[in-house]
Length: 198
Image (cartoon, rainbow, N blue to C red; front, side, top):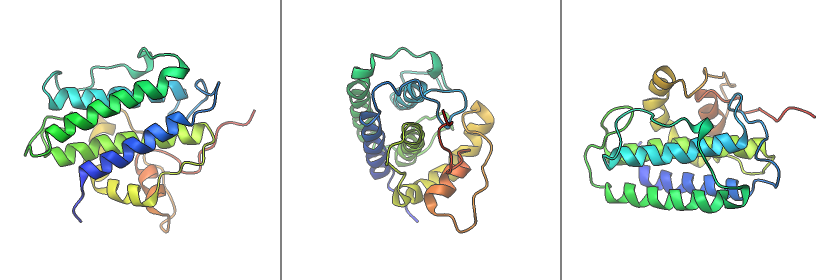
């Protein structure tokens, strides 16, 4: 199945921005499915991952992961969505300018621009889910988006897990689970995760 990485990226960016706009007041410090990270830290991570990938494809940064998202500066809660929107707009333009490139640098090594855009989409989508679950939003990762991200996930998740420790161990899901649950489990997320009581 052919994957349109640029369409996936647009959908994942829209999903992430919608979820961040829906974070309730006072919820930025809430726990998330990303162990020991708050909503604010997950957002920082998602934002910086998008920037880091763009810096690589525009050859402004060395390969690897130069940022510590947990310590990243960020504006106040009122600025979070606007700040993210600006980052995502810049990222979308950068990927579009590289659309025809047969090879762009990424932390996983060189790949076609469309495949790189799909990698960026995967990162944005799973972190959007993290934030949505942590803040009780009715904003599921759709099966359509998850199905499109299956191929990029198969290509990069194990590498990122082994090289950077960014994905937890695979979480087993039922064999008849839908594409979203399967993708989440593969990226180390329990699709049934809920915020701690109390």
